[in-house]
Image (cartoon, rainbow, N blue to C red):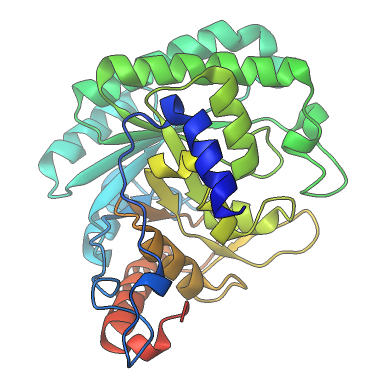
Length: 336
């Protein structure tokens, strides 16, 4: 996207960007050092809070208590914890909030999903919206810093490949349902002062940054922002390149990032340990730093296998080591 086109797009969507929470990065071309091609200001690493997304200890015929997962996040060096689809009012929620209050974590999140975009569950859309609104209210009442929402469901949105599924198969009825859900989510976040984001996921209707734009425009959002997830972006070849994605005006409200690695084969993309996949995490992190992203970064570990503590600790160590490398060895900055 050329810069003139971007300026025109930003003017047309100014109302969409009200309340942007991040500052765009400064072009490297504007600040060049003799040694490394980048300025000292670019080398000032943002102190992104690192969040344990609560699925490292799931799957693979094993079970860990919530207390054990909290302790793992603590000793691995995470700054916060993200609960996954725990229903407010349930016993599990009460336990989670008790552990939350007793912990030293500085940031908390809640991940939620609804499958009512697809035909099979569309008759439950009103009750699903009520549950989403209840979850947003629970976040506000319990001082949970952010909530992410994904629009799940493959069913008739399934295609022969990742790029031919999800938004590529969606028809008008699917988009209208997505608009209705996200509009309600956005309004609930605005009423309750909660930072919300729309999560992209392969095979589902919101699977690319481009589908995020379509849903945001259709829902006429005012409060929430987009989420970015490395492995879902990487796996879908219909998504634009990362540099172009970060030029999209909606990304001025980017407030949640997931950095997960994977190995990809056809329609499958199992997560792997942070430094073992095919995604260049150093390059992605450098782009986010250049952009100016300062918000939370989480990672996912569903069914990675092996010791989940080792897997999640590697996330913290690798991200911190990458920032240290960028700072102390600027000649190795990936975007020179």
